[in-house]
Amino acid sequence: MNTTTQNTKAITLGIDGMSCGHCVQAVTKALSAVPGVKIRSVAVGSAVIETADGWTTGKAVAALQEAGYSANPVGETTAAGAPMAAQAGGGCCGGARRSPSDAAAGTKASGGCCG
Image (cartoon, rainbow, N blue to C red):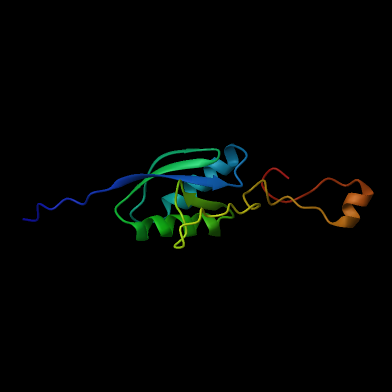
């Protein structure tokens, strides 16, 4: 009988590009699809997850990037020791864009879940 238990740790992810409840749903869905990730909570701008290792945390961050959100574990630094820069844009609402011709014509932006 195997009595070894896998230790998990809670990690807070800072997530850029979230602005509404639709974003919370999109982030929850993306994180739910990652094997080994247990979601504690998701709110606009952050998520608290439980993972067993850094590799799984990286998979969670990659899943969020694929969904259009920039995410980093809070307080994480690059290999050189510098803080990681936040990346703008993305997200379901951040995807709303308008072309220069639309802007000149006064047309509203379209795209994203709320656009």
